[in-house]
Length: 241
Image (cartoon, rainbow, N blue to C red; front, side, top):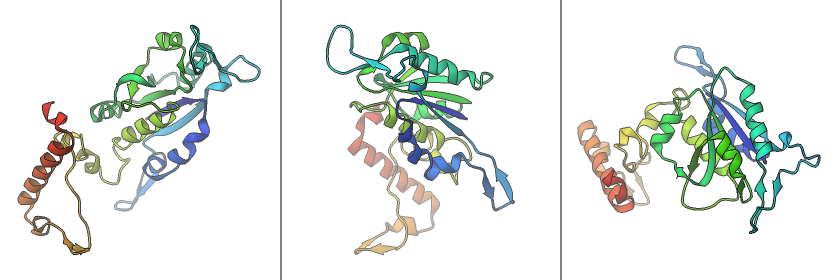
């Protein structure tokens, strides 16, 4: 998958894209079991919207028509940036995504859908908003990561990237890890069950006996019961879907 990010602050992405699972997914990995090399499952391309403004001072924002606080990103640099970026690999169609509090909620189901795509293009706005005429012309999917407001779309874009990339086959050490996560199909779209590891007793708290029993049927039943219990306590709304 090719992932393009359009932003006014490209430096914000360096640490996130260069760490942990996201870094590993963009690099070839040696498979020790058969000495083969897994090619990168994705690539990241961060683009500065300011590079496409016609303003000689690289200014991209102006006060809003109608008055009010904040600044609005002008439509021309956003539109021109999208056109230039998509032309870099014109044979692969990009799914455009605009990160905005007015978008539809981001879910695991959407992450699974997007993980199947060959290319996504994330538009991370900043300040008050992006001029609506750019949005109307580009017609991106509009996505919100929650009922709150951030200073810009950069952090939201990082959330989407992480939730998508980990679902691409080969990104994780074990693909079943993602399949059984909270909200995933393997977890029946419920919250995940508790997890335990060594030592068997810590601070006088033992691991539940069922997990030490070796009886996989009982273990699976216990995990399902715990998942349902936690979902009822913390997210009862999920049980109505």
